[in-house]
Image (tube, rainbow, N blue to C red; front, top):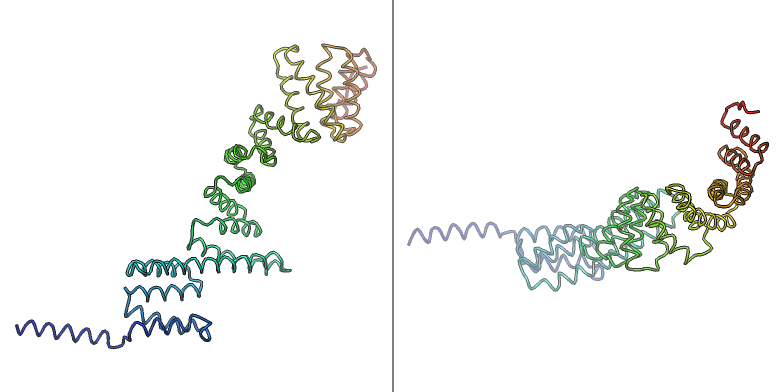
Length: 376
């Protein structure tokens, strides 16, 4: 019995020593809140932090103490510490969860609005230095928002904008990707993500994103246009033609789509096994080039390609050689140093029976290539 009382006395003495410097918990929480909340006097975060630090030493597993610490950290923009304190408040005192969630929501809204303010300043200030300063503030705040609510897409999209404005395009695309994965039904965000991927030359992934975009919004014509270009870059020509045919129906006056379709049909005709098989493609190329060049008459290369299509049809109808010669003259008129066009013109003249003109055109082609012709 004497041993029990002796042990109890030792424990009591130790406890009184440890708690000798501790004040009641309410002293720390109420006093700290007075310094945190500007509406109750002058804000003094340094003094509030002293009180919170002391209070946490005395009451580390108290929900209100941890909640007060979280409020302090929110004002100091130390969002990682804020979230840790809120988690601790809920862990030690589950009844604090509603208040913790409310504080998180309030701070998120305030932080997001402050970030928008810095973002707007960054786009309006006169100097690059000031822009960078404001953009960096916005980045820190948006990252804090993500810590508070990783499911909110606004911070991701705005971070993408900030990094794009700073010229850090890879990071901008990264945040676009995160936003699109969170909201895969957003075709607008999907298109923005695809554009970033294209800038990174990640064409295959961009194609996959754009295919999802146009599947959800079949009238998203900018997405269709970019998808068509990417199909062409990846040599998926049949898919490219499908897209451009769709676009040409929507925009019948677009020179770009007409030119691409014309070039495709010229290629198909050239690669056909026989002239008979190639003829339908050459006829379509002829029609498309005629429409394209009416809108873009300065494109010497397309005048040349049009001439090739017409020359290839000459075996079916000799009058095509005359048409080809006229078209090839247009190519040379636009670009007199176009050696291949001179040679093609020589061939058209030869088929027309104009030997002298054919010889002169061929001599010019040789001259442009730096050769001396021996033809008489």
